[in-house]
Length: 261
Image (cartoon, rainbow, N blue to C red; front, side, top):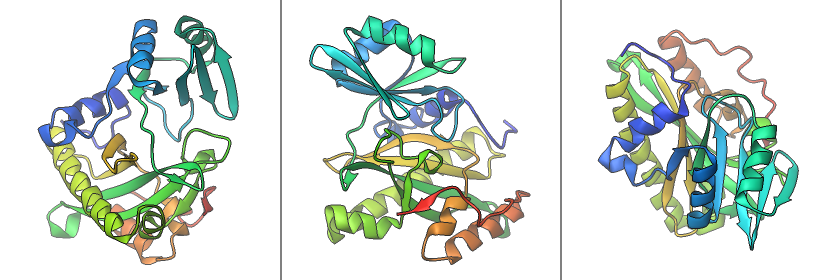
């Protein structure tokens, strides 16, 4: 299929779950309705709901069972509801238009008490026959009052090796870095077969407290500008060079709303 980008998180999830090697790293994801909300909360205790075609963390809500109640964390707002039915009605009133997905919540590693996830970027190298190349990784730490880590939502950017070493130790950090690279290569292969025209991917990877890696979603036009906050300036330079090779120009690449951690 001649498509260089894909906005539907549902279709991208289907690409991931269509790979035997990747499917076990994808949290259960369903199209949201009242039945799905109730059953997933009973089974997992925590889920995230998000627009099927959203980006930048806009519209994402964390929904969690707290005793007999249901708590919703949307932006900086937290509400409590007597039942999943009542919570669903609140969601319908406050969500963005369009279809939403419900995804099993991952209790991720934390940095100073805040959730952490990792963005891994893979790009086509047109100088090497469009081979996929892993060009950068960064860690994102959630804003203290929010449930999402996106830089556009106040998340802080950290170098991956340093943050991992400080959280799980150097040995485990090295193991996780290898797993990130393996997942990125396998994901690039799966998307390359499904959509041969795609040139770049940004994987959002979470690590749970047992150090298992989960692919939360894949962005087919990742924002490269937060990589300008990493100490190694060569990372973004390499990304921009490869992007030019497939015709993408990033305006103001060193100007970002993201903040360094």
